[in-house]
Length: 400
Ligand code: PLP
Image 1 (tube, rainbow, N blue to C red):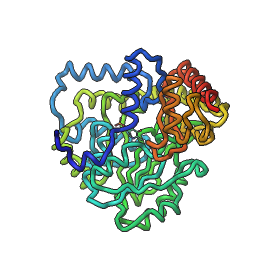
Image 2: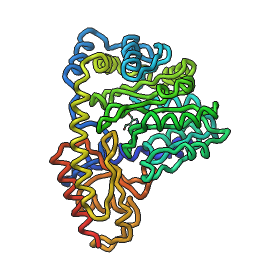
Image 3: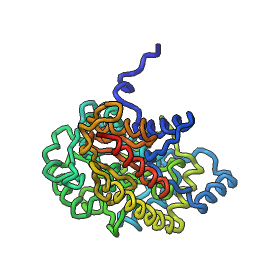
Image 4: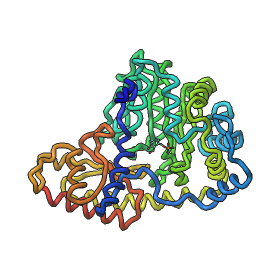
């Protein structure tokens, strides 16, 4: 028997990746599964980006690049930060990784010692706690209830900070809740952080462009320039340009942190794919109309889904301000029973009931630190979404 390390035993597989895999397996067994577990746009990568990749291959750009990314891509990222976020970075403050996930991984592994604390507002993206634990750190969860719009409140942040706090993880728009912090809300959190100079901020801005109802996007380093020296701004092309499979994310931070992250990457994956880097460069430098079009589509789908869900007795959700997920309360169903006599006591039970009785795959809120809720993705076409809502309603009707 292979002896596994304590490090690997501390963590669990990503629930969202596993749910997608499970849905594919059940489909392969012939079951008519509708899956709303996807954390990715259902569109193809725009043609001009694909063409840039084909061109890069034809031109022989198929070799190792600098570990932290090609100079031309870093230049495109510097320009992106200036153009879209009014943030001035140099290329020495930029790193390109295999997805935003590796940016976060590299940063936590490079900075967290055993017993260091990482503040994670809940609901949170599934990978933050496990990457923290892999690094030997301790996740400190701060509950952000739906009554506060799932947003971290300054007084709760103040209470969570100790001498051991290394990072605050901020994710706006948020996966799974869609909560999107305004500049004013970020400023109120910054006012707390200013008083605690040992705490760094990681802002995961991967859903920056998926933001609805005309809201303006804001990020911490822009709102609080005095914190820029201890902020890692994380972003990438996955969600904005429908490029999840290309695996390109990037981070911007003070050079000593970037250098540590590059050192770690030099001993693990080396550079992100050279062809994908060329494609990401085209995405950032090229026409941006794809973003506006996909935002419009997602907002229409959001409205369809939220209305249908709120019409189901016992389910409740706010219209998410950003990202492409609805985070739905199912606590109104707790205590009801399935036809087989199983009692629904948690969102895990409800999610299992939906899969078993309706062939509908969604994600339990416990994966995101909120066991009263479940998550659906509306990155699916409208007929699929309507069918999923029909199955949700039927799943509810089957309870008594
Ligand atoms: N951060 C959040 C909040 C996410 O939801 C995801 C993907 O689901 C990522 C980061 C990872 O993005 P990437 O595909 O660039 O690694």
